Amino acid sequence: MFDLFIDFSVTLTGFSTFRLQGTGMAAPYFETVQKIIGPATLDELLLQYQAIVATANGDAATLDNLLRNTIFNDPKFGPVTRNIIKLWFVGTWYQLPKDWWGAYGTGEQGDSFVVSPAAYTEGLLWPTVGVTPAGAKAPGYDSWVNAPVFS
Image: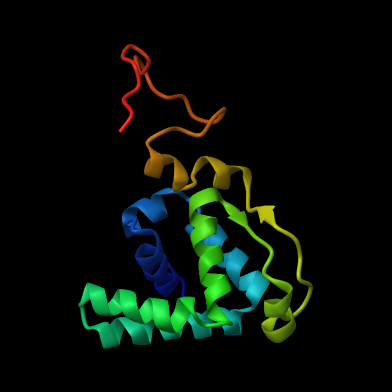
């Protein structure tokens, strides 16, 4: 299921498998999601995704439509999927809504938390906006010679 989690994450984030694996956060994120929502719920979500990919048969528009209507709009899978996106981009697992937890959760609900110190520095937010994480990675040699370019 780990490989399917990576494939799902590639679709959700728009980043390549290579880039996601390169963060070093793939296994910790998989384990975090699995621990919080339970292996059975995660497996169900990933198998649903796999079925959607098969149905879309390589058509990006169909895949997008099916993801929106089948997973994102689903009361069980939608909140988890949005949390997986946030996890990759900001390294934080956000507490699931109480309604979700009451209907589908097992165990203790828990709070929002940063998965690890590396999760902050490796978040996909930074390359997306074209900066380095403040206080964690240097911007690079000679990076302040020219004024910033705003688009």
